[in-house]
Amino acid sequence: MSRVYFDNAATTPIAKEVIDAMVKVMELDFGNPSSVHAPGRKARTIIEESRKSVAKALNCSPGEIFFTSCGTEADNMGIRKSVDCCGIKNIITSAIEHHAVLHTVEELEKSGRIKMHLVNLLENGHVDLNHLEELLQQNSNVLISLMHANNEIGNMLDLEKVSELAEKYKALFHCDTVQTIGHYDFDLSKLNIHFLAGSAHKFNGPKGIGFIYINHKTKITPYITGGSQERNMRAGTENIYGIAGLSKALEMATQNLENEIKHIQEIKTYMIDQLKEKMNGVDFNGDTEGNSLCTVLNVSFPPSSINEMILFKLDIAGISASGGSACTSGSNAGSHVMKAIKANPERAAVRFSFGKYNTKAEVDFVVIKLIEMFQVKKSVEA
Ligand code: PLP
Image (cartoon, rainbow, N blue to C red; front, side, top):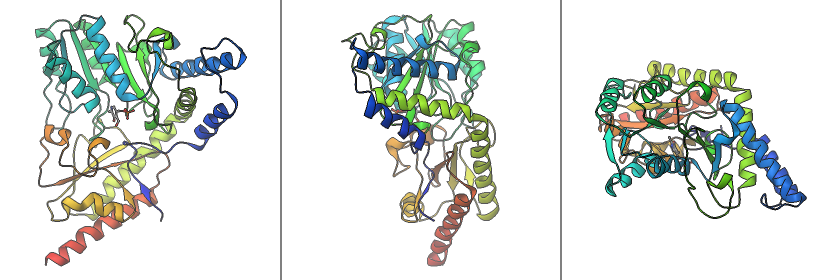
């Protein structure tokens, strides 16, 4: 078997159809979308059609979608602009957010512009919604910044509930949906979300392109100043190929959402069952069999001298997995998420993350290799 790629939460392979759509734009539509002549107008049309398509997938208005360079930029834009323009003085977030959020909020606190409040986590890693409500009762001018699905353990937030709490306490709500866009059926018309972030490379689109949804009632000033691109909010000549690729990838994901979720969930469940059946002492981090994203499975291996080397050994065996978020991959040592959920440091945590191109046969291969790795070590130790 050639390489098994179980690191789809870090990034996904680009779909062939997306590459074709991008190449077509590269070859034919080189115009600057700000030019008034025909090639420029054609390029502009591609961007606006893409914006409409993204808005349709999320059930919001095209005017609420702004293209960015990635998910990190979208998170930064939402959080920073809420402070600049919406009078936010308190940000409630959690210790398991992606660094795109955590480092941004920490920096805002260091500069004295906001106070940061960390909401408690329950034992299974979910946000304690009672504590969230207490924090909302105690503070005013609040932005809630909580992720929809955690990229390391897969735990999912109750979006409806948090959106209701935000409404009840007149707080703004920023949601890092980078792991769920393209893997979850969003209806933004029914949710009280003010800022939401997406990134194409997490749903079989290209890298270097993302978007932010900003609810039409939320008024902000430009994030990047310069030309009038993105309706004055983010200056700079648009990444037209990336935008065309993002919208094609989201269109494909949305059209096949039900089947893809079913397929990916089957792979995750199969891997859980196989590991439970065939390996002693294996456990899982997070609410794996509860409210958890189908793409992410965080396996906790029993203490062993190979634990330090497990990602390396998997790589040598032709298996791509990760020890945490991509920024810390190669080692689980630095994972702030593992620390925050108080995972046992004696046990190695490996994130296997699945995508639409994965198969059960690949799970069989990975489980066999894992058994071999642990057994080889057992006999050496004996
Ligand atoms: N937020 C989450 C939850 C992520 O998983 C990631 C990527 O790993 C990001 C934000 C950053 O997205 P990007 O890589 O597009 O900057």
